[in-house]
View (cartoon, rainbow, N blue to C red):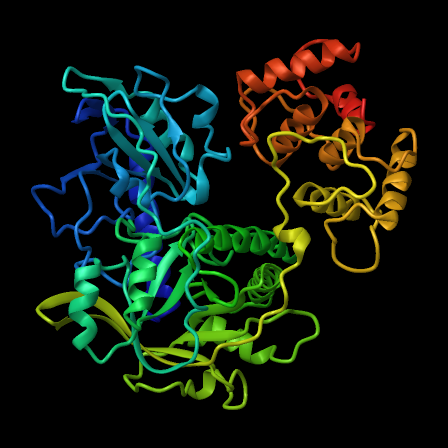
Length: 579
């Protein structure tokens, strides 16, 4: 989190950062960096930091850097860093590095340093949350590339340059990732707590956290997600979360994604309120995925970090709309919504719209007002009666290094007055699984997750299977909805969900032109539909690669369509009519 300094100062820092990135993006001279036989060409303006030689170095991505080795305790990471530029972290491919990964990494092609070409599309599903993780088994290396949403192509080009040197020693991808037991969730965070806390750019090591049990703090803010995180999170794993909660630490999960449109950050959400709201929904989905990976389950408050901005009618409206989308989607997932900003911008906007029927405002307010007073009084920025029922956190002092238990950490100081809340029940169609290895026929009396998926898809298509939530049972109400959908798309109205009905349901939606190299949600819909229609066995990863193109060609040939491997109007029409 940045200091709540003047907006002019904030923008000056962002502009300087953008200029530095611009110079990197345009650089033509490169140099080779070899780590354990993974040889990559990077712009010669990038720093190279060997973490074995500098174990105390902070892994931060607001300066273009290649980091070699495993991150240390991260105690030196400054608390005022926000924003990302292009960067690369190269670590040994082992259970420890994979435990801190943000998902299943992409795999390099056997015996090479690079993955399939489609995997390097920065808009693809493998580029999660402004980053891309690649397991290079031929060298025993896990490569983590980061970007801020505007320079992904440049980072992908760096990854394409990679080759293997003579130092490469193969190492298979470990199957035991060292994370907490699958599905295990800690108590909702931060829960009920009144007292001091701190936030740090990177999660400190468990040993540092143990040392700080002697401090006056019992809560810590951690950056779990967002493409504007400046610091790497080499210590942040599900086991780390479980351990800290088990030692009575309260956690404040932070998501820092695109910023207000009236700032000069490289990654910004739209000034159009409708678009900004949809972007807030997308950011919430990303944050929930990260929270669940870390064992932070329903009832947890996740705090959206919106840095200081100029309060104009247009900009404030975009922030409020973005936060509305964020809050509504978190509630649909069963989480509480938190909001962090400076007192003079975001907190003031929330204060002015308290009780609004136009916007859905967050459950918790976390404001920055550096008056040095450890309380939740925000003065003129937030009226006393608003967010007053255990719903406030104040950041009252900016970056300062403190030492406790023999360990120094750079922190921001906070005071919390929070109470465990009661978020709405999750919307089962927001959380429903749609990706299955197969889509067998469903008939009267069928039960299970696939029935729930069908009921949710029917609801999205305008055919509600009953008055309440999906039951997971194909009862008569569901059969009636199936018949209505089948009649609408031109299928025989049998009431059974056969392969044709699955194909139509799974492909429903927008119909963009898709071809090799494309990526995104529409590609995922096509992959699901082809798996239902052909038992194609495609990975539903949203990447239109050779396997997807081959399945499209097979489908086109089987249905008497022009065979070109491109999903155009005729192919969409066939899929959405269940052929």
